[in-house]
Image (tube, rainbow, N blue to C red; front, top):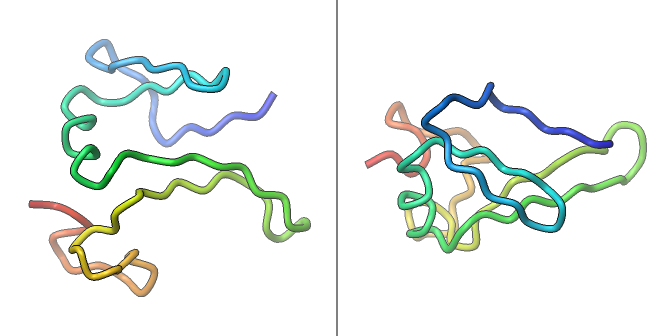
Length: 80
């Protein structure tokens, strides 16, 4: 069984199940992510140094194709 946890779920989390994955998301985050076209979670296995989950959005924050790989401003990626 593979797992990915960015934080512990709380009572105010929404629960989604997609492709046998249970996703616990803070209430309200769903609306914020919809403006980016939703979230895609993949598992990659490209050797021992590149194995794990990737989380991406369809539309990058800022609309200019930025994916924050070079760092984010003090306000964070996609914070409004």
